[in-house]
Length: 398
Length: 148
Image 1 (cartoon, one colour):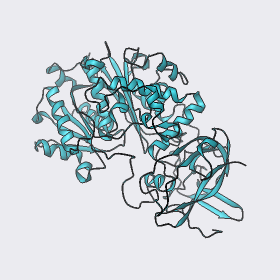
Image 2 (tube, chains in turn green, purple; image 1 turned 60 degrees about the vertical axis):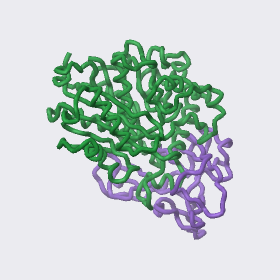
Image 3 (tube, rainbow over the protein chains, first blue to last red; image 1 turned 30 degrees about the horizontal axis):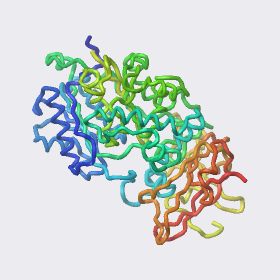
């Protein structure tokens, strides 16, 4: 059935993750060509290119859609480049979808690609004491893992989670990642290895925190009508929510040094992270009970457990039970991160949210190979990044 | 400043050190009372339903309860200072919830306190702290410390 709020996923493609010494444009081109081939369209058919920006690759990174278009050969299509931290790819998809729903384009190429140095992410260079991202490093030495450590310790205090619970998430995701040819880390890991890996930011150890990585992903979106004509309308994006927090924020989310005071304003009933998935559910009329799988932004193992509750897979405090019962593992009722997640990919910022949609698409088409979720018909992808960014994308079979 | 240590870069309006002790300073909207920490560097109010521009200086509570904590076992990248001729020593970070303001404020934990000394929910005090810049110059910051 055709729906007025849907766009079709015509094709998807990736470059395998991992630091392979290529430029972000080359990674992006490989992903883009794979997505075009998968879609059965040519570069000349593309009517808009939306690029996820990278802030680590100079001017070409800021104009990513242009850099990729030039590399593919100028063919006149308009470009749009956007940056939304970890939600960059979802915002790019949202822009593409809006153009299609408005009737401004029938075929849109969305690409995200990055190269990322090893180690902690660092703020953009220079002395900038008016930049919260600079200040948190300069004054507190508060890296991303430090913020993740705060959230993980909070979960332990609130929910009684243990380091062993967190390690079980890594074991699960490493197993899934070992089956995915696009993943960077393909080795299975046991809990003992996780718990003996070096402590980075208490209570999180190295193998409980996602690495930084090179990577690229691309999606070709099309209008319902165009996709139907080509008989490639099996998988639809049903909702994209790329929203901002509502004041007052109740959690000190990065890169900020404080939460908002609740003395003068009453917070909403949902946290920002909860509102990401729920606003997408409400937009398309699907709910967590309709999901067959989910791709969640597991910047850490502890954060994956937070997401189970925030996207409604279980009640608050029940995530560990869901995990240990195998519900979220491959073969379970609702596998989470069947791709292996960030845990197996490492993070390539502008590519990651697009990669999540690639994975959902392969799963819903039955093309996921060794890590296939049988009979999957609907899934959600969620992410959160700094500076109030976050997104959820609901993908479903027609 | 009582001891002449200059405020760390960017923090000139963030705290006050005087006869009445060491306090963090929030901005307070003169119309709706919304608090901002750090104080806003630009006019306006964080409350989306308030269009007032004026902010007054509002000292924050100097005690709170530990909302969460972590530490840093590896050297953070610049701009975190790397003082010359010193070894990196891990430090703990605290997120402290202030009851009156219903607000959580991050900070480094005083350097003699280890992460193993901390428990979520424990009372914490604000104390002046010192950061040594990459040029070897002492700078004033704020620290959290378990209440005595």
